[in-house]
Length: 356
Ligand code: PLP
Ligand code: COI
Image (cartoon, rainbow, N blue to C red):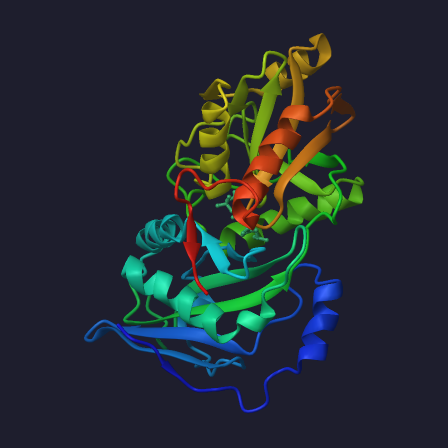
Protein backbone atom coordinates (compact mmCIF):
# COMPACT_ATOMS: atom_id res chain seq x y z
CA UNK A 1 0.00 0.00 0.00
CA UNK A 2 1.50 3.37 -0.97
CA UNK A 3 0.84 6.66 0.78
CA UNK A 4 -0.18 9.82 -1.06
CA UNK A 5 0.90 13.13 0.46
CA UNK A 6 -0.73 16.51 0.89
CA UNK A 7 1.83 19.07 2.08
CA UNK A 8 1.07 21.39 4.98
CA UNK A 9 0.50 24.85 3.39
CA UNK A 10 2.32 26.70 6.19
CA UNK A 11 4.83 24.37 7.88
CA UNK A 12 6.26 25.42 11.25
CA UNK A 13 9.40 27.59 10.86
CA UNK A 14 12.73 26.11 12.04
CA UNK A 15 13.14 28.66 14.86
CA UNK A 16 9.79 27.65 16.37
CA UNK A 17 10.74 23.96 16.22
CA UNK A 18 14.07 24.84 17.89
CA UNK A 19 12.14 26.56 20.70
CA UNK A 20 10.09 23.37 21.25
CA UNK A 21 13.30 21.28 21.28
CA UNK A 22 14.80 23.39 24.08
CA UNK A 23 12.20 22.06 26.55
CA UNK A 24 9.79 19.64 24.85
CA UNK A 25 8.06 18.17 27.92
CA UNK A 26 5.79 15.24 26.98
CA UNK A 27 3.03 15.24 24.38
CA UNK A 28 2.50 19.00 24.24
CA UNK A 29 3.41 19.95 20.67
CA UNK A 30 2.62 18.06 17.47
CA UNK A 31 4.35 18.00 14.11
CA UNK A 32 2.92 19.41 10.87
CA UNK A 33 1.55 16.17 9.43
CA UNK A 34 -0.46 13.07 10.31
CA UNK A 35 -0.54 9.62 8.69
CA UNK A 36 -4.02 8.21 7.98
CA UNK A 37 -5.41 4.91 6.65
CA UNK A 38 -9.17 4.26 6.64
CA UNK A 39 -11.03 0.97 6.86
CA UNK A 40 -14.54 -0.06 5.85
CA UNK A 41 -15.98 -3.55 6.26
CA UNK A 42 -16.70 -3.82 2.51
CA UNK A 43 -13.42 -2.38 1.25
CA UNK A 44 -10.78 -3.17 3.85
CA UNK A 45 -7.90 -0.73 4.46
CA UNK A 46 -7.59 2.03 1.85
CA UNK A 47 -6.68 5.65 1.16
CA UNK A 48 -3.30 5.69 2.92
CA UNK A 49 -2.09 9.28 3.08
CA UNK A 50 0.03 11.87 4.82
CA UNK A 51 -1.89 15.10 5.30
CA UNK A 52 -1.61 18.32 7.33
CA UNK A 53 -2.20 17.86 11.07
CA UNK A 54 -5.61 19.19 12.07
CA UNK A 55 -9.01 18.45 13.63
CA UNK A 56 -10.84 15.23 12.69
CA UNK A 57 -14.38 15.58 11.33
CA UNK A 58 -16.40 13.05 13.31
CA UNK A 59 -20.10 12.21 13.37
CA UNK A 60 -21.57 12.80 16.87
CA UNK A 61 -22.83 9.20 16.77
CA UNK A 62 -19.35 7.80 16.00
CA UNK A 63 -19.02 4.54 17.88
CA UNK A 64 -15.79 5.50 19.64
CA UNK A 65 -17.51 8.41 21.41
CA UNK A 66 -20.01 6.02 22.99
CA UNK A 67 -18.32 2.63 23.31
CA UNK A 68 -14.62 3.55 23.42
CA UNK A 69 -13.56 1.18 20.63
CA UNK A 70 -10.04 2.57 20.46
CA UNK A 71 -6.52 1.13 20.67
CA UNK A 72 -3.15 2.87 20.51
CA UNK A 73 0.61 2.45 20.53
CA UNK A 74 3.63 4.41 21.74
CA UNK A 75 6.98 4.29 19.91
CA UNK A 76 9.87 6.73 19.45
CA UNK A 77 12.15 7.93 16.64
CA UNK A 78 15.73 8.80 17.64
CA UNK A 79 18.25 11.05 15.86
CA UNK A 80 21.65 9.34 15.82
CA UNK A 81 25.11 10.94 15.78
CA UNK A 82 25.52 9.67 12.16
CA UNK A 83 22.59 11.88 11.11
CA UNK A 84 20.24 8.94 10.57
CA UNK A 85 16.83 8.65 12.24
CA UNK A 86 15.89 5.26 13.66
CA UNK A 87 12.99 3.68 15.47
CA UNK A 88 13.05 0.70 17.84
CA UNK A 89 11.39 -2.69 17.20
CA UNK A 90 8.39 -1.30 15.26
CA UNK A 91 7.16 -4.79 14.31
CA UNK A 92 6.57 -5.42 18.01
CA UNK A 93 4.29 -2.39 18.22
CA UNK A 94 2.53 -3.46 15.02
CA UNK A 95 1.86 -6.91 16.46
CA UNK A 96 0.69 -5.48 19.78
CA UNK A 97 -1.66 -3.02 18.05
CA UNK A 98 -3.24 -6.00 16.31
CA UNK A 99 -3.52 -7.95 19.57
CA UNK A 100 -5.26 -4.93 21.14
CA UNK A 101 -7.46 -4.56 18.05
CA UNK A 102 -8.58 -8.21 18.24
CA UNK A 103 -9.55 -7.76 21.89
CA UNK A 104 -11.47 -4.54 21.19
CA UNK A 105 -13.29 -5.80 18.06
CA UNK A 106 -11.36 -3.56 15.68
CA UNK A 107 -9.83 -4.76 12.39
CA UNK A 108 -6.20 -5.84 12.17
CA UNK A 109 -3.82 -3.71 10.13
CA UNK A 110 -1.09 -5.26 7.95
CA UNK A 111 2.13 -4.92 9.99
CA UNK A 112 3.94 -3.53 6.96
CA UNK A 113 1.32 -0.75 6.62
CA UNK A 114 1.87 0.11 10.29
CA UNK A 115 5.63 0.36 9.73
CA UNK A 116 5.17 2.30 6.46
CA UNK A 117 2.91 4.83 8.20
CA UNK A 118 5.72 5.59 10.64
CA UNK A 119 8.35 5.72 7.89
CA UNK A 120 6.27 8.09 5.76
CA UNK A 121 5.35 10.43 8.63
CA UNK A 122 8.89 10.65 10.01
CA UNK A 123 10.35 11.20 6.52
CA UNK A 124 7.92 14.07 6.01
CA UNK A 125 8.45 15.60 9.48
CA UNK A 126 12.14 14.65 9.97
CA UNK A 127 12.97 18.21 11.06
CA UNK A 128 10.89 17.52 14.19
CA UNK A 129 13.16 14.74 15.51
CA UNK A 130 15.25 16.33 18.29
CA UNK A 131 18.86 15.44 19.05
CA UNK A 132 20.21 15.19 22.58
CA UNK A 133 20.07 13.03 25.66
CA UNK A 134 16.60 11.79 26.54
CA UNK A 135 14.98 13.53 23.57
CA UNK A 136 13.07 11.80 20.79
CA UNK A 137 10.07 12.11 18.50
CA UNK A 138 7.25 10.23 20.25
CA UNK A 139 4.92 8.56 17.75
CA UNK A 140 1.37 7.77 18.68
CA UNK A 141 -0.34 5.32 16.29
CA UNK A 142 -4.03 4.82 17.14
CA UNK A 143 -7.16 3.26 15.69
CA UNK A 144 -10.82 3.92 16.46
CA UNK A 145 -14.36 3.27 15.25
CA UNK A 146 -15.79 6.14 13.21
CA UNK A 147 -19.05 4.45 12.18
CA UNK A 148 -22.15 6.53 13.06
CA UNK A 149 -24.17 3.81 14.74
CA UNK A 150 -25.37 3.31 18.30
CA UNK A 151 -25.82 -0.45 18.05
CA UNK A 152 -23.34 -2.42 20.12
CA UNK A 153 -21.43 -4.61 17.65
CA UNK A 154 -18.15 -4.73 15.79
CA UNK A 155 -17.86 -1.42 13.85
CA UNK A 156 -17.97 -1.27 10.05
CA UNK A 157 -15.92 1.94 9.69
CA UNK A 158 -12.61 2.58 11.36
CA UNK A 159 -9.64 4.92 10.99
CA UNK A 160 -5.95 4.41 11.80
CA UNK A 161 -3.75 7.45 12.39
CA UNK A 162 -0.26 8.36 13.53
CA UNK A 163 0.60 11.67 15.17
CA UNK A 164 4.04 12.71 16.38
CA UNK A 165 5.33 14.88 19.21
CA UNK A 166 8.90 15.88 20.17
CA UNK A 167 9.46 14.79 23.79
CA UNK A 168 11.96 14.95 26.61
CA UNK A 169 11.86 12.86 29.76
CA UNK A 170 8.52 12.08 31.45
CA UNK A 171 10.11 12.52 34.90
CA UNK A 172 12.54 15.26 33.82
CA UNK A 173 16.15 14.68 32.80
CA UNK A 174 17.49 13.16 35.96
CA UNK A 175 17.76 9.62 37.27
CA UNK A 176 16.10 10.69 40.54
CA UNK A 177 14.12 7.86 42.19
CA UNK A 178 10.34 8.23 41.95
CA UNK A 179 7.75 7.64 44.65
CA UNK A 180 4.93 5.22 43.85
CA UNK A 181 1.47 4.92 45.42
CA UNK A 182 -0.18 1.49 45.82
CA UNK A 183 -3.76 1.67 44.54
CA UNK A 184 -6.06 -0.05 47.05
CA UNK A 185 -9.32 1.67 46.02
CA UNK A 186 -9.09 1.25 42.27
CA UNK A 187 -8.20 -1.78 40.13
CA UNK A 188 -6.83 -1.48 36.61
CA UNK A 189 -7.63 -4.91 35.18
CA UNK A 190 -9.14 -8.28 35.96
CA UNK A 191 -8.70 -11.75 34.48
CA UNK A 192 -10.55 -11.87 31.16
CA UNK A 193 -10.72 -8.07 31.03
CA UNK A 194 -8.86 -5.64 28.78
CA UNK A 195 -5.70 -5.12 30.86
CA UNK A 196 -3.39 -6.60 28.22
CA UNK A 197 -4.83 -4.37 25.48
CA UNK A 198 -3.49 -0.88 24.93
CA UNK A 199 -6.92 0.74 24.86
CA UNK A 200 -7.93 4.22 26.04
CA UNK A 201 -10.41 3.07 28.68
CA UNK A 202 -7.66 1.41 30.73
CA UNK A 203 -6.01 4.80 31.08
CA UNK A 204 -9.22 6.69 31.84
CA UNK A 205 -9.94 4.12 34.54
CA UNK A 206 -6.47 4.58 36.04
CA UNK A 207 -6.68 8.37 36.32
CA UNK A 208 -8.64 8.35 39.59
CA UNK A 209 -5.82 6.29 41.09
CA UNK A 210 -3.23 8.71 39.63
CA UNK A 211 -5.05 11.60 41.28
CA UNK A 212 -4.98 9.74 44.61
CA UNK A 213 -1.25 9.13 44.12
CA UNK A 214 -0.60 12.81 43.41
CA UNK A 215 -2.62 13.80 46.49
CA UNK A 216 -0.19 11.65 48.51
CA UNK A 217 2.91 13.15 46.93
CA UNK A 218 3.56 10.21 44.58
CA UNK A 219 4.33 10.42 40.83
CA UNK A 220 2.84 7.08 39.75
CA UNK A 221 0.46 4.31 40.81
CA UNK A 222 1.11 0.61 41.27
CA UNK A 223 -1.83 -1.68 40.59
CA UNK A 224 -2.21 -5.05 42.30
CA UNK A 225 -3.89 -8.26 41.19
CA UNK A 226 -7.53 -9.04 41.95
CA UNK A 227 -6.65 -10.46 45.36
CA UNK A 228 -4.80 -7.27 46.30
CA UNK A 229 -1.66 -9.31 46.93
CA UNK A 230 0.58 -9.49 43.88
CA UNK A 231 2.28 -6.66 42.02
CA UNK A 232 1.05 -6.11 38.44
CA UNK A 233 2.17 -2.87 36.78
CA UNK A 234 1.98 0.91 36.96
CA UNK A 235 -0.61 2.98 35.07
CA UNK A 236 1.67 3.22 32.03
CA UNK A 237 4.79 1.22 32.87
CA UNK A 238 5.92 -2.31 33.72
CA UNK A 239 7.82 -3.00 36.92
CA UNK A 240 11.01 -4.87 37.93
CA UNK A 241 12.66 -5.65 41.27
CA UNK A 242 16.39 -6.37 41.56
CA UNK A 243 17.73 -8.82 44.13
CA UNK A 244 21.05 -8.49 45.95
CA UNK A 245 22.61 -11.20 43.75
CA UNK A 246 21.54 -9.34 40.60
CA UNK A 247 18.51 -11.52 39.79
CA UNK A 248 15.67 -9.55 38.20
CA UNK A 249 12.06 -10.21 39.13
CA UNK A 250 9.11 -9.05 37.07
CA UNK A 251 5.43 -10.07 37.06
CA UNK A 252 4.66 -12.73 34.44
CA UNK A 253 2.20 -11.94 31.65
CA UNK A 254 -1.11 -13.42 32.69
CA UNK A 255 -3.41 -11.35 30.50
CA UNK A 256 -3.97 -8.50 32.95
CA UNK A 257 -0.81 -6.49 32.23
CA UNK A 258 0.62 -4.95 29.09
CA UNK A 259 3.32 -6.94 27.26
CA UNK A 260 5.81 -4.05 27.31
CA UNK A 261 8.45 -3.80 24.60
CA UNK A 262 10.82 -2.06 27.01
CA UNK A 263 10.18 -4.92 29.47
CA UNK A 264 10.97 -7.57 26.84
CA UNK A 265 14.10 -5.70 25.72
CA UNK A 266 15.43 -5.29 29.27
CA UNK A 267 14.86 -8.99 29.98
CA UNK A 268 16.98 -9.79 26.90
CA UNK A 269 19.73 -7.31 27.86
CA UNK A 270 19.81 -8.59 31.45
CA UNK A 271 20.12 -12.20 30.26
CA UNK A 272 22.83 -11.18 27.77
CA UNK A 273 24.85 -9.77 30.65
CA UNK A 274 24.49 -12.97 32.69
CA UNK A 275 21.76 -11.84 35.07
CA UNK A 276 18.97 -14.28 35.89
CA UNK A 277 15.42 -13.07 35.20
CA UNK A 278 12.37 -14.56 36.90
CA UNK A 279 8.98 -13.79 35.36
CA UNK A 280 6.59 -14.85 38.09
CA UNK A 281 4.06 -13.79 40.73
CA UNK A 282 5.58 -11.26 43.15
CA UNK A 283 3.61 -10.33 46.24
CA UNK A 284 3.81 -7.01 48.02
CA UNK A 285 4.72 -8.99 51.16
CA UNK A 286 7.73 -10.50 49.38
CA UNK A 287 8.80 -7.02 48.28
CA UNK A 288 8.36 -5.52 51.76
CA UNK A 289 10.27 -8.36 53.48
CA UNK A 290 13.00 -8.41 50.82
CA UNK A 291 13.51 -4.65 51.09
CA UNK A 292 13.61 -4.89 54.90
CA UNK A 293 16.12 -7.77 55.03
CA UNK A 294 18.29 -6.51 52.18
CA UNK A 295 17.59 -9.26 49.62
CA UNK A 296 15.64 -6.91 47.29
CA UNK A 297 17.77 -3.84 46.72
CA UNK A 298 16.47 -1.98 43.67
CA UNK A 299 13.15 -1.45 41.92
CA UNK A 300 12.37 0.30 38.67
CA UNK A 301 9.56 1.03 36.25
CA UNK A 302 9.94 0.95 32.46
CA UNK A 303 8.12 1.97 29.31
CA UNK A 304 8.67 3.73 26.01
CA UNK A 305 7.73 7.19 27.25
CA UNK A 306 9.60 7.16 30.58
CA UNK A 307 12.29 4.60 29.54
CA UNK A 308 13.63 3.40 32.94
CA UNK A 309 12.73 5.14 36.21
CA UNK A 310 14.24 4.00 39.54
CA UNK A 311 11.64 3.52 42.28
CA UNK A 312 12.84 4.94 45.60
CA UNK A 313 9.74 4.47 47.71
CA UNK A 314 6.51 2.52 47.52
CA UNK A 315 3.74 3.99 49.68
CA UNK A 316 0.97 1.58 50.74
CA UNK A 317 -1.39 3.49 53.03
CA UNK A 318 0.65 4.26 56.13
CA UNK A 319 3.38 1.73 55.25
CA UNK A 320 6.33 2.74 53.10
CA UNK A 321 8.84 0.39 51.46
CA UNK A 322 12.14 2.20 50.93
CA UNK A 323 14.70 0.86 48.46
CA UNK A 324 18.20 1.05 49.89
CA UNK A 325 20.32 -0.08 46.93
CA UNK A 326 22.46 2.20 44.78
CA UNK A 327 20.47 1.51 41.58
CA UNK A 328 23.66 0.40 39.84
CA UNK A 329 21.94 -2.47 38.00
CA UNK A 330 18.96 -0.26 37.09
CA UNK A 331 21.38 2.37 35.78
CA UNK A 332 23.46 -0.12 33.79
CA UNK A 333 20.36 -1.59 32.11
CA UNK A 334 19.02 1.86 31.32
CA UNK A 335 22.35 3.01 29.88
CA UNK A 336 22.59 -0.03 27.63
CA UNK A 337 19.03 0.30 26.34
CA UNK A 338 19.31 4.06 25.80
CA UNK A 339 22.73 3.51 24.20
CA UNK A 340 21.25 1.11 21.63
CA UNK A 341 18.28 3.38 20.96
CA UNK A 342 20.43 6.49 20.54
CA UNK A 343 23.17 4.84 18.48
CA UNK A 344 26.10 4.78 20.93
CA UNK A 345 25.94 1.05 21.83
CA UNK A 346 26.09 -1.77 19.25
CA UNK A 347 22.64 -2.98 18.20
CA UNK A 348 23.51 -6.68 18.39
CA UNK A 349 19.89 -7.88 18.23
CA UNK A 350 18.95 -5.85 15.14
CA UNK A 351 16.32 -3.88 17.06
CA UNK A 352 16.83 -0.59 15.22
CA UNK A 353 14.90 0.22 12.06
CA UNK A 354 16.24 3.08 9.93
CA UNK A 355 13.63 5.66 8.90
CA UNK A 356 15.73 8.45 7.36
N1 PLP B 1 2.16 -0.88 30.81
C1 PLP B 1 1.28 0.04 30.39
C2 PLP B 1 -0.09 0.03 30.98
C3 PLP B 1 1.65 0.98 29.41
O1 PLP B 1 0.80 1.90 28.99
C4 PLP B 1 2.96 0.95 28.89
C5 PLP B 1 3.37 1.93 27.89
O2 PLP B 1 3.32 1.73 26.74
C6 PLP B 1 3.83 -0.05 29.34
C7 PLP B 1 3.40 -0.94 30.30
C8 PLP B 1 5.20 -0.18 28.76
O3 PLP B 1 5.15 -0.68 27.45
P1 PLP B 1 6.26 -0.33 26.37
O4 PLP B 1 7.56 -0.69 27.00
O5 PLP B 1 5.94 -1.18 25.21
O6 PLP B 1 6.16 1.12 26.11
C1 COI C 1 4.30 4.79 26.49
O1 COI C 1 5.18 4.55 27.32
O2 COI C 1 4.50 4.81 25.29
C2 COI C 1 2.95 5.05 26.90
O3 COI C 1 2.08 4.70 26.19
C3 COI C 1 2.72 5.85 28.06
C4 COI C 1 1.61 6.84 27.78
C5 COI C 1 0.29 6.26 28.16
C6 COI C 1 1.89 8.17 28.41
